Image (cartoon, rainbow over all chains, first blue to last red; front, side):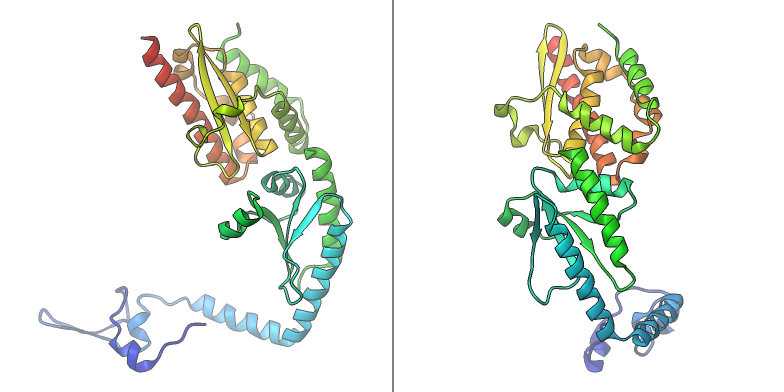
Amino acid sequence: MLYGKEALLNKLPPYQGGGEMIATVTFEKTTFADLPHKFEAGTPNIAGGIAFGAALDYMNAIGFDQIAAYEAELLDYATKALKQIPGVRIYGEAEEKTAVLSFNVEGIHPYDIGSILDKMGIAVRTGHHCAQPIMDFYQIPGTVRASFSFYNTQEEIDRMVEALQKAILMLQ
Amino acid sequence: MESIAEKQQEIIEEFSLFEDWMQRYEHMIDLGKSLPLIAEEYKTEDNIIKGCQSKVWVHATLEGDQLVFTADSDAIITKGIIAILIRVFSHQHPKAILDADTDFIDQIGLKEHLSPTRANGLVSMIKQLKMYAVAYQTQLN
């Protein structure tokens, strides 16, 4: 969510032109529509706005505390499961960490693991995650990163772990 | 010596033997293990192929009038990919390398089964091998 002070927004020129952002146009002078229309050239993202409202309603109905607790549970479950696999190193184990799990397997490039997991229907991210300095610090080319959300299940984590074990067998 | 086209045909047939892409990946990993490795001294920044998420080094030398490639990568699937390319293009005359098409890659379906990053890397690898061929072709003339 982005908000700005009205007085400053009034001073700020529009960043692009389009429908509904104009008040009057003559050869001498152009004046722009009032806030917020000045900054909303063209057809606004109506579907996105409605969907955002629906998404917030949905999450409120579940409860943010509930979501946070469940995601912490998933993270804990996945962390414990991964630690059972020989050669796995987890990066980042802060207590209040959000539900992401960055890891590598000794002697295997993270991108190889990602490719094989992908072929088994497991979606993870690989690479430096826009954090190259920390990859340099650890002297690694990147990590594999699984992230969990409240719509994920423990069973899915089991499947990921199983797939990871197969991938390790293939790649070692 | 087999021609580039013959080697490409051989690879197409080889890949058609496998039933699914997991098996093809396993095959690529095996091919990576047979890659003629680049000497450590040539693993320099200059020999790194740009546009790959994993590091790939390629080196070329001329033996008689034939170009011979060696390579390495820190990722094993990438090693398999460059091994396939080297199997096709190594021990060939630079002109033959320059004239060769690379349709076999589409025929084995490699590109569609690689991630976009790796598919781009594959294109960069081919470009680099052809660049070497251009350089040595000039030298031979």
